Length: 67
Image (cartoon, rainbow, N blue to C red):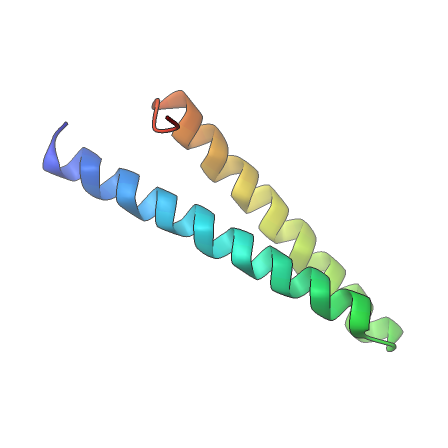
Protein backbone atom coordinates (compact mmCIF):
# COMPACT_ATOMS: atom_id res chain seq x y z
CA UNK A 1 0.00 0.00 0.00
CA UNK A 2 1.34 3.43 -0.90
CA UNK A 3 2.16 5.97 1.82
CA UNK A 4 -0.61 8.30 0.63
CA UNK A 5 -3.14 5.46 0.60
CA UNK A 6 -2.06 4.46 4.11
CA UNK A 7 -2.49 8.05 5.34
CA UNK A 8 -5.97 8.25 3.85
CA UNK A 9 -6.87 4.91 5.45
CA UNK A 10 -5.60 5.98 8.87
CA UNK A 11 -7.41 9.34 8.68
CA UNK A 12 -10.63 7.66 7.58
CA UNK A 13 -10.51 5.07 10.35
CA UNK A 14 -9.70 7.79 12.91
CA UNK A 15 -12.63 9.87 11.67
CA UNK A 16 -14.92 6.83 11.93
CA UNK A 17 -13.97 6.31 15.58
CA UNK A 18 -14.20 10.02 16.38
CA UNK A 19 -17.59 10.35 14.69
CA UNK A 20 -18.87 7.28 16.53
CA UNK A 21 -17.82 8.80 19.86
CA UNK A 22 -19.44 12.13 18.92
CA UNK A 23 -22.67 10.31 18.02
CA UNK A 24 -22.71 8.50 21.37
CA UNK A 25 -22.09 11.77 23.23
CA UNK A 26 -24.74 13.62 21.23
CA UNK A 27 -27.27 10.86 21.84
CA UNK A 28 -26.58 11.04 25.56
CA UNK A 29 -27.01 14.82 25.58
CA UNK A 30 -30.18 14.49 23.51
CA UNK A 31 -31.70 12.13 26.07
CA UNK A 32 -30.83 14.49 28.94
CA UNK A 33 -32.03 17.81 27.53
CA UNK A 34 -35.42 19.22 28.42
CA UNK A 35 -35.33 22.19 26.05
CA UNK A 36 -37.07 21.66 22.71
CA UNK A 37 -34.74 24.06 20.90
CA UNK A 38 -31.63 22.27 22.18
CA UNK A 39 -33.22 18.90 21.37
CA UNK A 40 -33.79 20.04 17.79
CA UNK A 41 -30.18 21.25 17.40
CA UNK A 42 -28.79 18.02 18.82
CA UNK A 43 -31.08 15.97 16.59
CA UNK A 44 -29.77 17.79 13.53
CA UNK A 45 -26.18 17.27 14.66
CA UNK A 46 -26.83 13.58 15.21
CA UNK A 47 -28.39 13.22 11.78
CA UNK A 48 -25.45 15.00 10.14
CA UNK A 49 -22.96 12.83 12.03
CA UNK A 50 -24.87 9.71 10.99
CA UNK A 51 -24.67 10.68 7.31
CA UNK A 52 -20.97 11.53 7.64
CA UNK A 53 -20.24 8.23 9.39
CA UNK A 54 -22.14 6.30 6.70
CA UNK A 55 -20.15 8.03 3.94
CA UNK A 56 -16.88 7.19 5.68
CA UNK A 57 -17.97 3.58 6.21
CA UNK A 58 -18.90 3.30 2.54
CA UNK A 59 -15.49 4.64 1.55
CA UNK A 60 -13.71 2.21 3.87
CA UNK A 61 -15.80 -0.68 2.59
CA UNK A 62 -15.21 0.13 -1.06
CA UNK A 63 -11.47 0.35 -0.49
CA UNK A 64 -11.39 -2.92 1.44
CA UNK A 65 -10.23 -1.35 4.70
CA UNK A 66 -12.59 -3.32 6.90
CA UNK A 67 -10.96 -6.56 8.00
